[in-house]
Length: 257
Image (cartoon, rainbow, N blue to C red; front, side):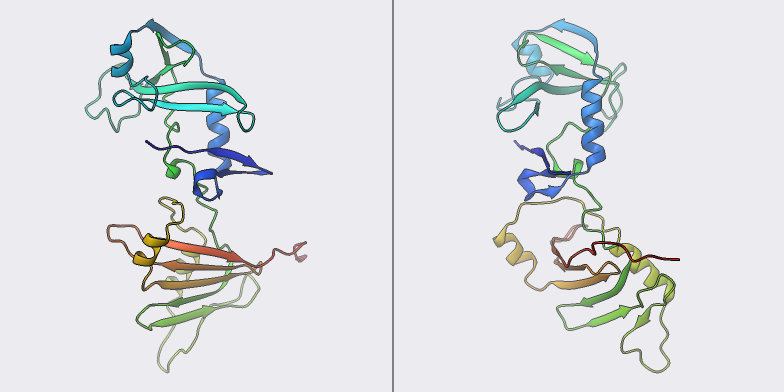
């Protein structure tokens, strides 16, 4: 029931249904190379019942719908297509759903009566954006200041100088208090390695509910970029967040010794 379109936008790949959020180029490249290298390990004639059982019907089918993968040279210019069905196992595992297959059943739409087994399990062939997103797309590398404001008014701010060896300082440090340096190092590392579980298209109603009382995290990096993240809580282990990146990268990096 899901569709995802990976398209090239200049020098990068983006996910069209996710507001052109950056796709992981390595994953796109590896999937294309795997598709180019596919070889027929075995092929068998099949009828409608076997096609449904192997999930090799068109995705729109009520039962037995597979995953249609279309490689294109641009809008309405398909180069090739294939329907990816069930995993192939030499021996049935205890947990087929989560086990890595030994291959995959596939079908060419122009040869609907022939099932093909390929040796590659094609685990990347899915329409969930979590499979494709560039998890470094919102990475505030080399932060020099981090400001956190909670909805209840609690607030803290840490910053350091522009040089790599500069120490972190906590604003409004009270007498007798000492900065926990190990904690600060962990916070700075988290800013540069945000764990993106999934990316969604913007939904004003959902955001209004989940971000009614957000925690606002503002991070400024050594390159002069400002990352602002509004974080809510929808329960479970994940949090809904909306982020923006502002600023302009310098035309040339400052020379170092």
